[in-house]
Amino acid sequence: MLKLRSGRTLYYGKGDVLSYRTYANPLSVKAVPESAYTGDSNVIFAHNITFAVSGEQLLTSFIEGDNSLVVATDSMKNFILRNTAAYEGSTTEGLLAFISSKFMDRYSHIDAVELSADRIPFQTLEVASPSGEGLEPSPLVYRRSHNDHTSASMKLVRKDGAPVIESHECAITDLQLIKVSGSSFYGFVRDEYTTLPESYDRPLFIFLDVFWKYAESEHALDAKLGSYVPAEQIRDITHNLFHEMKSPSIQFLIYQVGLRILTRFPQLSEVRFESNNRTWETIVDNTEADPAGVYTEPRPPFGFQGFTMTQEDLIQGGE
Ligand SMILES: O=c1[nH]c(=O)c2[nH]c(=O)[nH]c2[nH]1
Image 1 (cartoon, rainbow, N blue to C red):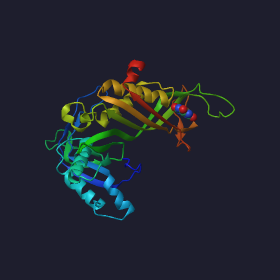
Image 2 (tube, rainbow, N blue to C red):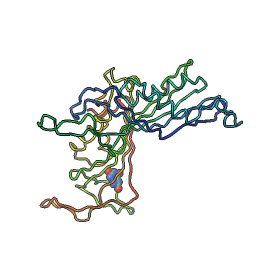
Image 3 (spheres, rainbow, N blue to C red):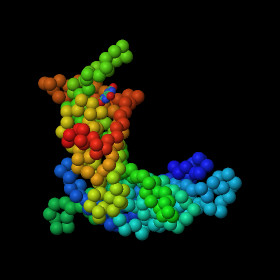
Image 4 (cartoon, rainbow, N blue to C red):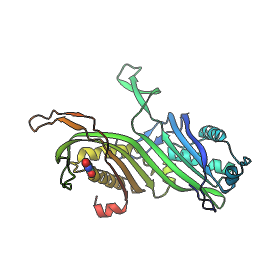
């Protein structure tokens, strides 16, 4: 958050602003080999938005109880919802930049806005075609999805009076992927604290969040510039790598996913991972002769990994 001249930080805002916009402009993106995704009709363009503001002139509201410059968080919610109707773009990032820069234009005493949005995903459904020949996507009925979802966060500050994006990050969160065979974990430190057996073929279940930043934030906002990276393609590249690789660890798996993402999208400056190990606990082991096994939910505590990569890694990693 913005540091005031006094070294203090302050902010206030509204969370869980649920915004269900219908018929936003459709998104169209270039294809990548790992994904069938080339865009979104955006018939439902829904988000859960968190919006926070900061500014030097808000200090008296905290230390003197002076509300004269306080835009009520209820008004912020109304501002977000009403201005969502006026958004003409097709991306979550573009929506965030649109709302926050409009807010800073409207309220000149606000020095910074920090906001984020989780896209609320709705899946297309196939229905019988009126011609009686096969199925086609319904343009009217959608299914709320509780799978992984896209999100984005952004910070805008005022420079020479105008709002500019100081930082941004895009994400796909809550990916949950299982590979039933073809993953190992062995060769790790063995000492008096080690009880984990080496595994040459484990059912690897990971929870994964992937984050990325663009070299030019403009590319995240406006898909018409031709360099927008949809979370769906990041998701599909991730499961392709999981499928392709015989992974010796989650650490190496996410590194390889990162190399592929950076190769496909040179417009990204950074990719970041947060993974969680949810490998099923083995009850009845499989054998080479019989692949059937029985597993159960792992018990806490759970291991995790974090890794940040840039285009520099491609030169070193040699994709
Ligand atoms: O992929 C893994 N990486 C680890 O660092 C680790 N540690 C552990 O107990 N299991 C695993 N799996």
